[in-house]
View 1: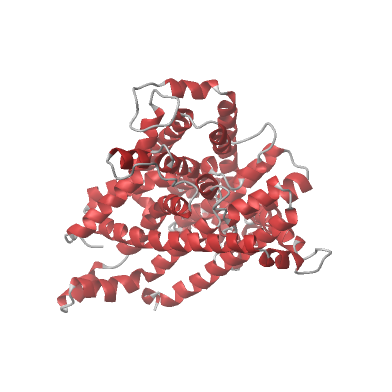
View 2 (view 1 turned 90 degrees about the horizontal axis):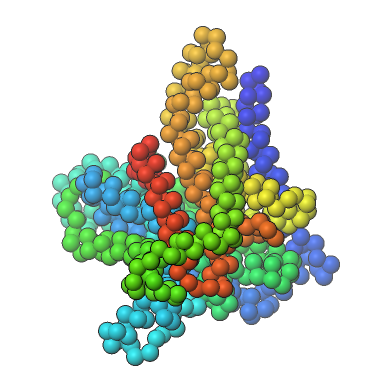
Length: 274
Length: 263
Protein backbone atom coordinates (compact mmCIF):
# COMPACT_ATOMS: atom_id res chain seq x y z
CA UNK A 1 0.00 0.00 0.00
CA UNK A 2 2.69 2.43 1.02
CA UNK A 3 4.78 1.30 -1.92
CA UNK A 4 1.87 2.07 -4.22
CA UNK A 5 1.37 5.51 -2.68
CA UNK A 6 5.05 6.35 -3.09
CA UNK A 7 5.37 5.43 -6.74
CA UNK A 8 1.74 5.48 -7.86
CA UNK A 9 1.28 9.15 -7.04
CA UNK A 10 4.33 10.20 -9.04
CA UNK A 11 3.54 7.92 -11.99
CA UNK A 12 1.05 10.05 -14.01
CA UNK A 13 3.40 13.06 -14.01
CA UNK A 14 6.49 10.91 -14.67
CA UNK A 15 4.82 9.13 -17.58
CA UNK A 16 3.68 12.49 -19.01
CA UNK A 17 7.25 13.87 -18.92
CA UNK A 18 8.73 10.70 -20.42
CA UNK A 19 6.14 10.26 -23.18
CA UNK A 20 5.66 13.92 -24.11
CA UNK A 21 9.11 15.39 -23.47
CA UNK A 22 11.99 12.96 -23.06
CA UNK A 23 11.02 10.54 -25.84
CA UNK A 24 10.09 13.23 -28.43
CA UNK A 25 13.29 15.23 -27.78
CA UNK A 26 15.37 12.03 -27.80
CA UNK A 27 13.82 11.04 -31.16
CA UNK A 28 14.60 14.50 -32.55
CA UNK A 29 18.24 14.28 -31.49
CA UNK A 30 18.60 10.61 -32.50
CA UNK A 31 17.28 11.42 -35.98
CA UNK A 32 20.33 13.59 -36.63
CA UNK A 33 22.61 10.55 -36.17
CA UNK A 34 20.60 8.26 -38.44
CA UNK A 35 21.26 10.06 -41.70
CA UNK A 36 22.19 7.87 -44.70
CA UNK A 37 25.07 10.20 -45.54
CA UNK A 38 26.95 9.39 -42.33
CA UNK A 39 26.61 9.56 -38.57
CA UNK A 40 27.75 13.17 -38.17
CA UNK A 41 26.73 14.39 -41.63
CA UNK A 42 24.13 16.95 -40.42
CA UNK A 43 26.69 18.44 -38.01
CA UNK A 44 29.34 18.59 -40.73
CA UNK A 45 26.77 20.42 -42.87
CA UNK A 46 25.97 22.81 -40.04
CA UNK A 47 29.51 23.68 -39.04
CA UNK A 48 30.89 23.86 -42.58
CA UNK A 49 28.37 26.52 -43.55
CA UNK A 50 29.57 30.03 -42.79
CA UNK A 51 25.98 31.27 -42.63
CA UNK A 52 24.93 28.67 -40.04
CA UNK A 53 28.04 29.24 -37.94
CA UNK A 54 27.29 32.96 -38.05
CA UNK A 55 23.78 32.31 -36.65
CA UNK A 56 25.26 30.27 -33.80
CA UNK A 57 27.94 32.86 -32.99
CA UNK A 58 25.42 35.72 -33.19
CA UNK A 59 23.08 33.87 -30.81
CA UNK A 60 25.90 33.22 -28.33
CA UNK A 61 27.06 36.83 -28.59
CA UNK A 62 23.58 38.33 -28.09
CA UNK A 63 22.85 35.95 -25.19
CA UNK A 64 26.17 36.79 -23.48
CA UNK A 65 25.77 40.56 -23.87
CA UNK A 66 22.14 40.34 -22.66
CA UNK A 67 23.26 38.32 -19.64
CA UNK A 68 26.07 40.74 -18.76
CA UNK A 69 23.85 43.83 -18.99
CA UNK A 70 20.95 42.17 -17.13
CA UNK A 71 23.30 41.02 -14.36
CA UNK A 72 24.73 44.49 -13.80
CA UNK A 73 21.45 46.38 -14.06
CA UNK A 74 19.50 43.74 -12.10
CA UNK A 75 22.04 43.51 -9.30
CA UNK A 76 22.23 47.25 -8.66
CA UNK A 77 18.44 47.56 -8.73
CA UNK A 78 17.91 44.53 -6.48
CA UNK A 79 20.50 45.97 -4.07
CA UNK A 80 18.58 49.24 -3.86
CA UNK A 81 15.24 47.40 -3.44
CA UNK A 82 16.64 45.19 -0.67
CA UNK A 83 17.65 48.28 1.30
CA UNK A 84 14.26 49.96 1.04
CA UNK A 85 11.83 50.03 3.96
CA UNK A 86 8.82 47.68 3.75
CA UNK A 87 6.23 49.73 1.87
CA UNK A 88 8.57 51.18 -0.77
CA UNK A 89 10.03 47.72 -1.25
CA UNK A 90 6.63 46.16 -2.02
CA UNK A 91 5.81 48.88 -4.53
CA UNK A 92 9.15 48.39 -6.29
CA UNK A 93 8.65 44.63 -6.42
CA UNK A 94 5.18 45.11 -7.92
CA UNK A 95 6.67 47.46 -10.51
CA UNK A 96 9.27 44.84 -11.41
CA UNK A 97 6.81 41.93 -11.50
CA UNK A 98 4.27 43.68 -13.69
CA UNK A 99 6.36 43.66 -16.89
CA UNK A 100 7.42 40.10 -16.06
CA UNK A 101 3.83 38.91 -16.11
CA UNK A 102 3.08 40.75 -19.35
CA UNK A 103 3.75 38.46 -22.27
CA UNK A 104 6.78 38.33 -24.54
CA UNK A 105 4.77 39.44 -27.57
CA UNK A 106 3.43 42.54 -25.85
CA UNK A 107 6.82 43.50 -24.48
CA UNK A 108 8.60 43.03 -27.79
CA UNK A 109 5.84 44.95 -29.55
CA UNK A 110 6.53 47.94 -27.29
CA UNK A 111 10.06 48.12 -28.68
CA UNK A 112 8.72 47.89 -32.20
CA UNK A 113 6.80 51.14 -31.55
CA UNK A 114 9.79 52.79 -29.90
CA UNK A 115 12.56 51.81 -32.30
CA UNK A 116 10.67 51.91 -35.63
CA UNK A 117 11.61 54.24 -38.48
CA UNK A 118 8.59 56.41 -37.62
CA UNK A 119 8.92 55.38 -34.00
CA UNK A 120 9.02 57.45 -30.86
CA UNK A 121 12.76 57.52 -30.44
CA UNK A 122 13.35 58.75 -33.99
CA UNK A 123 10.56 61.33 -33.65
CA UNK A 124 12.09 62.60 -30.41
CA UNK A 125 15.62 62.78 -31.79
CA UNK A 126 14.42 64.64 -34.88
CA UNK A 127 12.21 67.11 -33.02
CA UNK A 128 15.08 67.98 -30.67
CA UNK A 129 17.36 68.49 -33.66
CA UNK A 130 19.83 65.75 -32.77
CA UNK A 131 19.00 63.90 -35.98
CA UNK A 132 17.93 65.27 -39.33
CA UNK A 133 16.83 61.93 -40.76
CA UNK A 134 15.39 58.87 -39.00
CA UNK A 135 17.83 56.07 -38.16
CA UNK A 136 17.05 52.44 -39.00
CA UNK A 137 17.20 50.98 -35.52
CA UNK A 138 15.00 47.93 -36.06
CA UNK A 139 16.43 44.67 -37.34
CA UNK A 140 19.79 45.36 -35.73
CA UNK A 141 21.64 43.42 -33.06
CA UNK A 142 21.20 46.41 -30.73
CA UNK A 143 17.41 46.30 -31.07
CA UNK A 144 17.34 42.61 -30.19
CA UNK A 145 19.64 43.15 -27.20
CA UNK A 146 17.61 46.09 -25.83
CA UNK A 147 14.36 44.12 -26.07
CA UNK A 148 15.96 41.03 -24.49
CA UNK A 149 17.40 43.05 -21.60
CA UNK A 150 13.91 44.47 -21.18
CA UNK A 151 12.54 40.92 -20.99
CA UNK A 152 15.07 39.59 -18.52
CA UNK A 153 15.92 42.42 -16.11
CA UNK A 154 12.73 41.87 -14.04
CA UNK A 155 13.56 38.17 -13.71
CA UNK A 156 17.08 39.05 -12.57
CA UNK A 157 15.76 41.62 -10.07
CA UNK A 158 13.34 39.13 -8.52
CA UNK A 159 15.98 36.42 -8.26
CA UNK A 160 18.52 38.76 -6.67
CA UNK A 161 16.18 40.56 -4.24
CA UNK A 162 15.44 37.17 -2.67
CA UNK A 163 19.16 36.37 -2.49
CA UNK A 164 20.17 39.76 -1.06
CA UNK A 165 17.41 39.66 1.56
CA UNK A 166 18.69 36.27 2.65
CA UNK A 167 22.06 37.74 3.65
CA UNK A 168 21.98 38.07 7.45
CA UNK A 169 22.13 41.65 8.62
CA UNK A 170 24.46 40.65 11.44
CA UNK A 171 27.22 39.85 8.96
CA UNK A 172 27.06 43.33 7.43
CA UNK A 173 26.96 44.99 10.85
CA UNK A 174 29.86 42.83 12.02
CA UNK A 175 31.87 43.82 8.97
CA UNK A 176 31.15 47.50 9.59
CA UNK A 177 31.92 47.30 13.30
CA UNK A 178 35.24 45.66 12.50
CA UNK A 179 36.12 48.79 10.55
CA UNK A 180 35.35 47.82 6.95
CA UNK A 181 34.25 50.68 4.73
CA UNK A 182 30.99 50.18 2.77
CA UNK A 183 32.85 49.32 -0.45
CA UNK A 184 34.96 46.77 1.43
CA UNK A 185 31.87 45.22 3.02
CA UNK A 186 30.29 45.04 -0.41
CA UNK A 187 33.28 43.37 -2.04
CA UNK A 188 34.21 41.05 0.84
CA UNK A 189 30.86 40.14 2.36
CA UNK A 190 27.87 40.90 0.14
CA UNK A 191 29.31 39.98 -3.26
CA UNK A 192 30.66 36.55 -2.25
CA UNK A 193 27.39 35.68 -0.51
CA UNK A 194 25.38 36.80 -3.53
CA UNK A 195 27.53 34.94 -6.08
CA UNK A 196 25.48 31.71 -6.14
CA UNK A 197 22.36 33.83 -6.76
CA UNK A 198 24.14 35.80 -9.47
CA UNK A 199 25.05 32.52 -11.17
CA UNK A 200 21.47 31.26 -11.00
CA UNK A 201 20.21 34.55 -12.48
CA UNK A 202 22.89 34.49 -15.19
CA UNK A 203 21.96 30.92 -16.17
CA UNK A 204 18.26 31.81 -16.36
CA UNK A 205 18.94 34.83 -18.57
CA UNK A 206 21.55 33.14 -20.74
CA UNK A 207 19.46 30.06 -21.51
CA UNK A 208 16.32 32.18 -21.92
CA UNK A 209 17.89 34.56 -24.41
CA UNK A 210 19.90 31.85 -26.18
CA UNK A 211 16.71 29.92 -26.96
CA UNK A 212 14.31 32.83 -27.50
CA UNK A 213 12.08 32.94 -30.53
CA UNK A 214 9.52 35.77 -30.58
CA UNK A 215 11.83 38.70 -29.76
CA UNK A 216 14.51 38.03 -32.41
CA UNK A 217 11.74 37.25 -34.88
CA UNK A 218 10.06 40.63 -34.32
CA UNK A 219 13.04 42.91 -33.71
CA UNK A 220 15.83 41.14 -35.57
CA UNK A 221 13.98 39.83 -38.61
CA UNK A 222 15.85 37.77 -41.20
CA UNK A 223 18.96 39.90 -40.84
CA UNK A 224 19.62 39.08 -37.19
CA UNK A 225 18.50 35.46 -37.22
CA UNK A 226 19.13 33.59 -33.97
CA UNK A 227 19.06 29.84 -33.26
CA UNK A 228 15.40 29.79 -32.16
CA UNK A 229 14.15 31.66 -35.21
CA UNK A 230 16.50 29.60 -37.42
CA UNK A 231 15.03 26.36 -36.04
CA UNK A 232 11.50 27.59 -36.75
CA UNK A 233 12.42 28.74 -40.24
CA UNK A 234 14.11 25.41 -41.11
CA UNK A 235 11.19 23.38 -39.75
CA UNK A 236 8.14 25.34 -40.90
CA UNK A 237 9.27 27.41 -43.89
CA UNK A 238 11.78 25.22 -45.72
CA UNK A 239 10.60 21.89 -44.19
CA UNK A 240 14.22 20.83 -43.63
CA UNK A 241 13.50 18.69 -40.59
CA UNK A 242 16.98 17.21 -40.41
CA UNK A 243 18.47 20.71 -40.39
CA UNK A 244 15.95 21.81 -37.75
CA UNK A 245 16.68 18.74 -35.61
CA UNK A 246 20.41 19.47 -35.83
CA UNK A 247 19.81 23.01 -34.58
CA UNK A 248 17.60 21.56 -31.83
CA UNK A 249 20.33 19.11 -30.77
CA UNK A 250 22.98 21.85 -30.64
CA UNK A 251 20.64 24.03 -28.54
CA UNK A 252 19.86 21.21 -26.09
CA UNK A 253 23.52 20.28 -25.61
CA UNK A 254 24.59 23.90 -25.12
CA UNK A 255 21.81 24.88 -22.69
CA UNK A 256 21.93 21.70 -20.60
CA UNK A 257 25.74 21.94 -20.56
CA UNK A 258 25.64 25.52 -19.29
CA UNK A 259 23.01 24.65 -16.66
CA UNK A 260 24.96 21.63 -15.37
CA UNK A 261 28.35 23.34 -15.23
CA UNK A 262 27.06 26.56 -13.67
CA UNK A 263 24.86 24.86 -11.06
CA UNK A 264 27.85 22.78 -10.02
CA UNK A 265 30.00 25.92 -9.70
CA UNK A 266 27.20 27.70 -7.80
CA UNK A 267 26.99 24.85 -5.30
CA UNK A 268 30.75 24.86 -4.76
CA UNK A 269 30.91 28.64 -4.33
CA UNK A 270 28.15 28.83 -1.73
CA UNK A 271 29.92 30.04 1.43
CA UNK A 272 26.74 29.64 3.51
CA UNK A 273 26.56 25.91 2.78
CA UNK A 274 29.86 25.12 4.51
CA UNK B 1 18.81 42.78 4.46
CA UNK B 2 19.37 46.24 5.87
CA UNK B 3 17.71 49.60 5.87
CA UNK B 4 20.65 51.92 5.71
CA UNK B 5 20.47 54.94 3.45
CA UNK B 6 20.95 54.19 -0.21
CA UNK B 7 23.68 56.04 -2.05
CA UNK B 8 22.03 58.73 -4.25
CA UNK B 9 23.79 57.51 -7.40
CA UNK B 10 22.45 53.98 -6.83
CA UNK B 11 18.96 55.31 -6.11
CA UNK B 12 19.02 57.40 -9.29
CA UNK B 13 20.18 54.37 -11.24
CA UNK B 14 17.31 52.27 -9.87
CA UNK B 15 14.85 55.05 -10.77
CA UNK B 16 16.14 54.96 -14.37
CA UNK B 17 15.71 51.16 -14.45
CA UNK B 18 12.09 51.48 -13.33
CA UNK B 19 11.51 54.15 -15.98
CA UNK B 20 13.00 51.75 -18.54
CA UNK B 21 10.73 48.94 -17.31
CA UNK B 22 7.46 50.87 -17.21
CA UNK B 23 7.70 53.53 -19.95
CA UNK B 24 7.25 51.04 -22.84
CA UNK B 25 4.01 49.82 -21.26
CA UNK B 26 2.75 53.40 -20.91
CA UNK B 27 3.62 53.96 -24.57
CA UNK B 28 1.50 50.96 -25.58
CA UNK B 29 -1.46 52.37 -23.65
CA UNK B 30 -0.99 55.76 -25.34
CA UNK B 31 -0.76 54.17 -28.78
CA UNK B 32 -3.92 52.14 -28.12
CA UNK B 33 -6.11 55.20 -27.59
CA UNK B 34 -4.66 57.31 -30.42
CA UNK B 35 -7.19 58.39 -33.04
CA UNK B 36 -4.86 57.60 -35.95
CA UNK B 37 -4.65 54.57 -38.23
CA UNK B 38 -0.94 54.20 -37.53
CA UNK B 39 0.86 53.57 -34.26
CA UNK B 40 2.00 56.75 -32.61
CA UNK B 41 2.90 58.28 -29.27
CA UNK B 42 1.92 60.64 -27.71
CA UNK B 43 -1.64 59.83 -28.86
CA UNK B 44 -3.26 62.17 -31.42
CA UNK B 45 -6.78 62.61 -30.13
CA UNK B 46 -8.48 60.04 -27.96
CA UNK B 47 -10.60 57.12 -29.08
CA UNK B 48 -11.67 53.71 -27.90
CA UNK B 49 -12.48 52.51 -31.40
CA UNK B 50 -9.42 50.24 -31.54
CA UNK B 51 -10.80 48.37 -28.55
CA UNK B 52 -14.12 47.98 -30.36
CA UNK B 53 -12.17 46.86 -33.41
CA UNK B 54 -10.65 43.92 -31.52
CA UNK B 55 -14.06 42.44 -30.90
CA UNK B 56 -15.01 42.84 -34.53
CA UNK B 57 -12.04 40.80 -35.71
CA UNK B 58 -13.18 37.21 -35.50
CA UNK B 59 -9.65 35.78 -35.40
CA UNK B 60 -8.98 37.59 -32.11
CA UNK B 61 -12.24 36.36 -30.61
CA UNK B 62 -11.72 32.71 -31.49
CA UNK B 63 -8.04 32.62 -30.56
CA UNK B 64 -8.72 34.37 -27.24
CA UNK B 65 -11.28 31.67 -26.44
CA UNK B 66 -8.82 28.93 -27.43
CA UNK B 67 -6.11 30.55 -25.29
CA UNK B 68 -8.40 30.70 -22.26
CA UNK B 69 -9.57 27.11 -22.73
CA UNK B 70 -6.01 25.83 -23.13
CA UNK B 71 -4.78 27.85 -20.14
CA UNK B 72 -7.60 26.68 -17.83
CA UNK B 73 -7.64 23.04 -18.90
CA UNK B 74 -3.86 22.82 -19.22
CA UNK B 75 -3.34 24.30 -15.77
CA UNK B 76 -5.99 21.99 -14.29
CA UNK B 77 -4.36 18.99 -15.98
CA UNK B 78 -0.90 19.95 -14.73
CA UNK B 79 -2.21 20.37 -11.18
CA UNK B 80 -4.07 17.07 -11.39
CA UNK B 81 -0.87 15.16 -12.10
CA UNK B 82 1.54 17.60 -10.46
CA UNK B 83 0.00 17.88 -6.98
CA UNK B 84 0.07 14.09 -6.28
CA UNK B 85 3.69 14.01 -7.50
CA UNK B 86 4.63 16.97 -5.30
CA UNK B 87 2.89 15.29 -2.36
CA UNK B 88 4.70 11.97 -2.83
CA UNK B 89 8.08 13.67 -3.28
CA UNK B 90 7.72 15.60 -0.03
CA UNK B 91 5.95 12.91 1.99
CA UNK B 92 8.28 10.06 1.02
CA UNK B 93 11.41 12.15 0.54
CA UNK B 94 13.72 9.56 2.06
CA UNK B 95 12.34 6.58 0.18
CA UNK B 96 12.19 8.11 -3.30
CA UNK B 97 15.29 8.53 -5.47
CA UNK B 98 16.46 12.06 -6.17
CA UNK B 99 16.20 11.76 -9.97
CA UNK B 100 12.44 11.58 -9.62
CA UNK B 101 12.17 15.22 -8.59
CA UNK B 102 14.74 16.25 -11.22
CA UNK B 103 12.46 14.85 -13.93
CA UNK B 104 9.82 17.46 -13.18
CA UNK B 105 12.25 20.32 -13.79
CA UNK B 106 13.04 19.11 -17.31
CA UNK B 107 10.19 21.01 -19.03
CA UNK B 108 11.95 24.21 -17.90
CA UNK B 109 15.48 23.08 -18.76
CA UNK B 110 14.79 21.86 -22.30
CA UNK B 111 14.55 24.88 -24.64
CA UNK B 112 10.87 25.60 -25.33
CA UNK B 113 11.39 25.90 -29.05
CA UNK B 114 13.02 22.43 -29.13
CA UNK B 115 10.21 21.01 -27.00
CA UNK B 116 7.54 22.47 -29.31
CA UNK B 117 9.26 21.20 -32.45
CA UNK B 118 9.81 17.68 -31.03
CA UNK B 119 6.25 17.48 -29.74
CA UNK B 120 4.87 18.51 -33.12
CA UNK B 121 6.94 15.87 -34.92
CA UNK B 122 6.28 12.95 -32.57
CA UNK B 123 2.85 13.64 -31.13
CA UNK B 124 0.84 15.87 -33.48
CA UNK B 125 2.14 14.27 -36.68
CA UNK B 126 3.56 10.97 -35.40
CA UNK B 127 0.58 9.94 -33.32
CA UNK B 128 -1.92 11.92 -35.36
CA UNK B 129 -3.34 13.70 -32.31
CA UNK B 130 -5.88 16.48 -32.98
CA UNK B 131 -4.33 19.97 -32.87
CA UNK B 132 -6.31 21.12 -29.84
CA UNK B 133 -5.28 18.05 -27.81
CA UNK B 134 -1.59 18.48 -28.76
CA UNK B 135 -1.77 22.14 -27.79
CA UNK B 136 -3.38 21.20 -24.49
CA UNK B 137 -0.91 18.49 -23.49
CA UNK B 138 1.98 20.66 -24.67
CA UNK B 139 0.89 23.49 -22.38
CA UNK B 140 0.09 21.14 -19.48
CA UNK B 141 3.62 19.76 -19.66
CA UNK B 142 5.23 23.18 -20.10
CA UNK B 143 3.62 24.37 -16.86
CA UNK B 144 3.99 21.12 -14.91
CA UNK B 145 7.16 22.37 -13.14
CA UNK B 146 5.13 25.18 -11.49
CA UNK B 147 2.60 22.70 -10.12
CA UNK B 148 5.27 20.39 -8.74
CA UNK B 149 7.71 22.99 -7.42
CA UNK B 150 5.42 25.72 -6.07
CA UNK B 151 3.03 23.24 -4.44
CA UNK B 152 6.10 21.31 -3.29
CA UNK B 153 7.40 24.41 -1.51
CA UNK B 154 4.14 24.60 0.47
CA UNK B 155 4.29 20.89 1.26
CA UNK B 156 7.86 21.22 2.51
CA UNK B 157 6.54 23.59 5.17
CA UNK B 158 3.64 21.27 6.08
CA UNK B 159 3.86 19.16 9.22
CA UNK B 160 2.94 15.65 8.10
CA UNK B 161 2.33 14.48 11.68
CA UNK B 162 -1.01 16.33 11.47
CA UNK B 163 -1.93 14.08 8.59
CA UNK B 164 -0.82 10.98 10.48
CA UNK B 165 -2.97 12.02 13.43
CA UNK B 166 -6.03 12.24 11.18
CA UNK B 167 -5.31 8.83 9.66
CA UNK B 168 -4.71 7.18 13.02
CA UNK B 169 -8.06 8.56 14.15
CA UNK B 170 -9.65 6.61 11.30
CA UNK B 171 -9.94 9.19 8.53
CA UNK B 172 -9.48 7.56 5.09
CA UNK B 173 -6.35 8.72 3.15
CA UNK B 174 -8.16 10.57 0.34
CA UNK B 175 -10.46 12.36 2.78
CA UNK B 176 -7.44 13.24 4.91
CA UNK B 177 -5.72 14.75 1.89
CA UNK B 178 -8.77 16.78 0.89
CA UNK B 179 -9.75 18.01 4.35
CA UNK B 180 -6.41 18.22 6.17
CA UNK B 181 -3.53 18.57 3.69
CA UNK B 182 -5.15 20.56 0.88
CA UNK B 183 -6.42 23.46 3.05
CA UNK B 184 -2.89 23.81 4.45
CA UNK B 185 -1.23 24.09 1.05
CA UNK B 186 -3.96 26.24 -0.50
CA UNK B 187 -1.67 29.26 -0.99
CA UNK B 188 0.84 27.14 -2.90
CA UNK B 189 -1.87 25.70 -5.14
CA UNK B 190 -3.21 29.19 -5.93
CA UNK B 191 0.30 30.48 -6.67
CA UNK B 192 1.01 27.50 -8.92
CA UNK B 193 -2.29 27.99 -10.72
CA UNK B 194 -1.59 31.67 -11.37
CA UNK B 195 2.01 31.21 -12.55
CA UNK B 196 0.97 28.30 -14.76
CA UNK B 197 -1.99 30.18 -16.20
CA UNK B 198 0.08 33.27 -17.03
CA UNK B 199 2.83 31.15 -18.60
CA UNK B 200 0.28 29.33 -20.74
CA UNK B 201 -1.64 32.39 -21.91
CA UNK B 202 1.58 34.16 -22.98
CA UNK B 203 3.39 31.22 -24.54
CA UNK B 204 4.73 31.59 -28.06
CA UNK B 205 7.65 29.19 -28.53
CA UNK B 206 5.73 25.96 -27.90
CA UNK B 207 2.40 27.07 -29.36
CA UNK B 208 3.94 28.22 -32.63
CA UNK B 209 4.47 24.57 -33.58
CA UNK B 210 1.26 23.20 -32.09
CA UNK B 211 -1.22 25.54 -33.72
CA UNK B 212 -2.60 24.64 -37.11
CA UNK B 213 -5.34 25.36 -39.60
CA UNK B 214 -8.34 26.70 -37.70
CA UNK B 215 -6.81 26.49 -34.22
CA UNK B 216 -4.45 29.14 -32.91
CA UNK B 217 -3.73 30.99 -29.70
CA UNK B 218 -3.96 34.71 -29.03
CA UNK B 219 -0.21 35.51 -28.93
CA UNK B 220 0.33 33.62 -32.20
CA UNK B 221 -2.60 35.51 -33.75
CA UNK B 222 -1.15 38.82 -32.54
CA UNK B 223 2.18 37.95 -34.19
CA UNK B 224 0.40 37.07 -37.43
CA UNK B 225 -1.68 40.27 -37.34
CA UNK B 226 1.43 42.35 -36.70
CA UNK B 227 3.10 41.04 -39.83
CA UNK B 228 0.16 42.23 -41.97
CA UNK B 229 -1.14 45.35 -40.28
CA UNK B 230 0.74 47.71 -38.04
CA UNK B 231 -2.21 49.56 -36.52
CA UNK B 232 -3.35 50.49 -32.99
CA UNK B 233 -5.48 47.31 -32.77
CA UNK B 234 -2.40 45.41 -31.62
CA UNK B 235 -1.75 48.05 -28.98
CA UNK B 236 -5.31 47.74 -27.68
CA UNK B 237 -5.08 43.92 -27.53
CA UNK B 238 -1.87 44.38 -25.58
CA UNK B 239 -3.63 46.77 -23.19
CA UNK B 240 -6.38 44.18 -22.62
CA UNK B 241 -3.71 41.57 -21.85
CA UNK B 242 -2.16 44.03 -19.39
CA UNK B 243 -5.54 44.40 -17.67
CA UNK B 244 -5.67 40.62 -17.30
CA UNK B 245 -2.23 40.82 -15.70
CA UNK B 246 -3.37 43.57 -13.33
CA UNK B 247 -6.36 41.41 -12.37
CA UNK B 248 -4.15 38.43 -11.71
CA UNK B 249 -1.77 40.54 -9.62
CA UNK B 250 -4.70 41.82 -7.57
CA UNK B 251 -5.70 38.22 -6.86
CA UNK B 252 -2.12 37.34 -5.87
CA UNK B 253 -1.85 40.38 -3.64
CA UNK B 254 -5.16 39.56 -1.95
CA UNK B 255 -4.36 35.89 -1.36
CA UNK B 256 -0.62 35.60 -0.87
CA UNK B 257 0.98 39.03 -0.97
CA UNK B 258 3.27 39.75 -3.91
CA UNK B 259 6.44 39.35 -1.90
CA UNK B 260 6.05 35.58 -2.12
CA UNK B 261 7.54 35.93 -5.61
CA UNK B 262 10.96 36.78 -4.22
CA UNK B 263 11.07 33.80 -1.89
